[in-house]
Picture 1 (cartoon, rainbow, N blue to C red):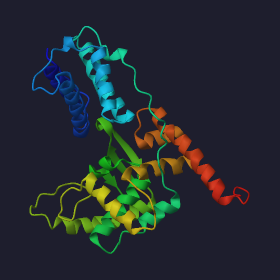
Picture 2 (spheres, helix red, strand yellow; picture 1 turned 120 degrees about the vertical axis):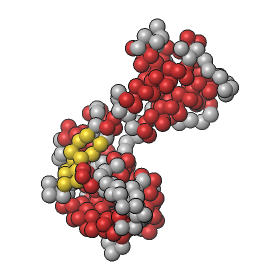
Picture 3 (cartoon, rainbow, N blue to C red; picture 1 turned 60 degrees about the vertical axis):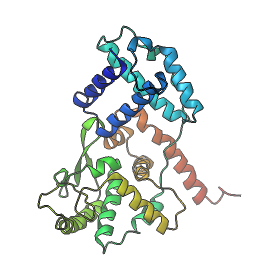
Picture 4 (cartoon, rainbow, N blue to C red; picture 1 turned 90 degrees about the vertical axis):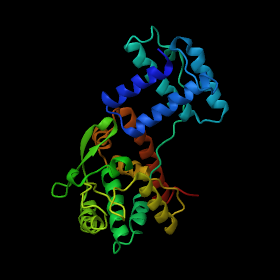
Length: 304
């Protein structure tokens, strides 16, 4: 079997059996395409699987590093290749797994970046609630901070996923796994206001078909994650905060503030939809950082 034939079988498996998202499938395809282009030296031809060994994979990683790829990027591409060959070995397409002999590059331990409660409040005060855009964006930011969901999960929400009465939202996470996430009173009030605006946005559509999407753009279609990012960038420029803030920072802030106020780590894991507790444990380091920052700002003997 050739590399390309095996790659298509692998991607079909991820899509139809593992229920991976279109975004994740795109990343896997891109990483495998880059690997086979390296193996064929960029020529439009295929390569038999038996010609690929652990040295081929190591050479590819060295090539990526020399091109200036970050260690995290190299590690992600290696993870895709490992998953690919693990699948092929399990399906007996290959008799050995060459990726098992390749070690993962050591990654720097970056702690997640987060906002203080005051910084969150500053950002939330910027959108104008008297406008359609502002009403929608307040609801978006309140829900991001109030639930800790990813921005991709937020824009995929439908109205049917939301229960204002119970203050719960059904979120579809990675691998299309569903979880119920609560949100607070402020997010509930912002969502209630936005739902009235949403009716106006629907009337701007050129079709009478109800899109079902919770968050709409100003033309009545489903909002995209990139639009949320651009709108947030606009609000940050209008603020007095000298920060680079991505929507994911609200997720980090949500988890950090819960942990700082005594929430159980397992509970935070469930709310965030993390498959592994080790991923959630990164926030314990962040919590210590926030504790030290609070100490330096509040204790009279902390400075000087």
